[in-house]
Amino acid sequence: MKHPSQKRAFPPNFFFSIPLFLIFAPLAGIFFWAEINSSAAEPLKYNYIKHSFDEIPMKKEATPQAVIFIGPPGSGKGTQAEKLKGYRHISTGDLLREEIKKGSKIGLSCKEIIDKGEMVPDSLISDLIESHFSPHILLDGYPRTLNQARWLDEKVKISQVFSFEVNVDKLVERLTNRRVCPSCKGVYNLVSKPPIKPFTCDQCATPLIQRADDVETVIRNRMRVYQEETAPVIEFYRQKGLLTNLDASQTPDTIADLIHKKIFPSY
Ligand code: AP5
Ligand code: MG
Image 1: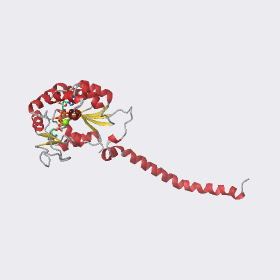
Image 2 (image 1 turned 45 degrees about the horizontal axis):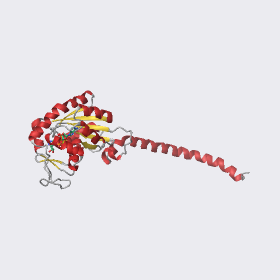
Image 3 (image 1 turned 90 degrees about the vertical axis):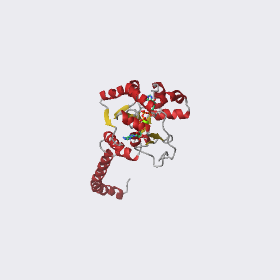
Image 4 (image 1 turned 135 degrees about the vertical axis):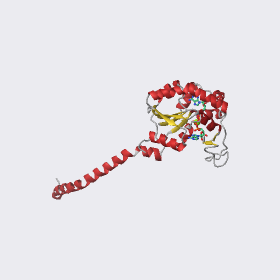
């Protein structure tokens, strides 16, 4: 049996809780409304500015989201890839050169092909590229054939394809003056973007080199291969409604702005 004072305690506490509820319920409502609104506006800004998308662990079944840069040799794909934050940059050219440097089986099979400016067989590239997939990828120089484009369609969700367009004379001038850092992959140009200290990488102080395929005869062969094999890939994506044509003879910052506005329209 309860003590009489316990019985009396219930009604006053209950009535006391009603005004408390009336005060705190609207405050809680305002708090949750503000939270929901701020998180609705945040994700893109958060990912783009503070973090790399690569930091988000990828679920096994998740399909990577891809942005693609297609363009002839020297059109500025690598230069723009360095500027676009938030995507894992996958350059098939860089991956293959890395294999050559390591002296791996793939590297040994493709060195001569690359030095001549020919296309490396698809079978050597697909496994290599897939091992670098992550939730948000930027593909620079892939796909270059219709076969590669069809293979990629099965593996990723493509959100944007940028086609870089520059006239041939400008491309030859850019490539013969290009110097690259073999260590951090920084891209320079003796005319338009010279390093601060001659022949030395601004970022890591490694001596710059000229790529073996940046001599005029090979450059012209790479352009021929591009016209024959890669031009149909541009049409493939145009028909899918994914293509944005870029005048890549503008300044690097102007081009970066155009790309950024297309990928992140709200920022
Ligand atoms: P890869 O390394 O991809 O060469 P590429 O496609 O020929 O393109 P580049 O890297 O030469 O030029 P870029 O467009 O990146 O220009 P960049 O920004 O450096 O491939 C090499 C080889 O690997 C291929 O030939 C093939 O053998 C093989 N390969 C690769 N992928 C393959 C695939 N999928 N299938 C089969 N084989 C494959 O700029 C160039 C210069 O211009 C720089 O000096 C830069 O500073 C300057 N520059 C850039 N933008 C501007 C600007 N807006 N204004 C003025 N100067 C600029
Ligand atoms: Mg490149």
